[in-house]
Structures are given as C-alpha cells and as structure tokens.
Length: 168
Image 1: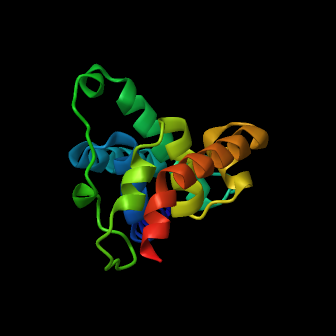
Image 2: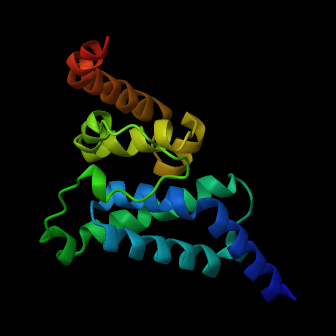
C-alpha cells in the first residue's frame, strides 16, 4: 500500500514539476542531455527520500533544492569542467506556457549572468519563488539573496536599457 502511495506521489510530482525542473537544470548546466540526466537524478532522489520529506517546506521548494544540489554536484564533476556548455535560446527546453515572441534578448541576458546571480534570477522571476523559499533552497541568508537579486536586476537593466527603448 505504501509503495502505491509513493508511486502516485511521484506521478503527481513529475506532472507538476518536470518542466520547471528541466528548465532550471538546463539553465544551470547549459547542456540539454546533462539537464535531462539531472532531472532524472532529482526525481530519483526525491522518490528515494520520500519518507524524509516532513512538509516543513513546500514540495516545490524541496524538489527545487534537490535539483539545485544535483546541478551543483554535476558541475563539480571533471566531465562538466571540460565540456563546452555554451547556451543558445533555441536549445532551451520547452516552457510550460506557450511563448510566441522570437526576440531572445532577455533570455540571452539572463543566461549571461554570473552563476550566483543567474540562480536567484531563475528561482525568483522564472520559477516565481519568494525570498523565504529561496533561503531554504539555497541555504543562504535572506540579505544575501536580496543583494544578489538587486545586483542581477541592475546588471540586466544596464544590459537591456538600449534594447527596451528601441522598442518604443
């Protein structure tokens, strides 16, 4: 019976979080195949540790934390250090909401941020996470996350200022 509940839970979690986790992993790893491996590893770890999930954080926060840690572990591997992981917006995984506009300027700007700024940007503005959720995922003080968000916003504003005003 417990195994049936665990299987149901995994099916539900995969349905709700597979695409957001894939986008997060791809943004971290800049490699589609490696991101897909990270997603599989993330959900395997979640399934394996299902009994340890105490509900102190939201399920989404718990899953994203596992994904972030998995990506960080993969980036530490010797294979990842010696691989060209340049990113193009065309190689990004499909989003959960249809996106028709073809201007990829903002995506390129976000992907060009330093890793520490990119991770908070992705979690906050792309995944819609609050500062409290991000403190649990990244295990950083709220002030550090807030500082990184402000710095990322400033960098993006400087990068995108000409692009934005060209549109008007």
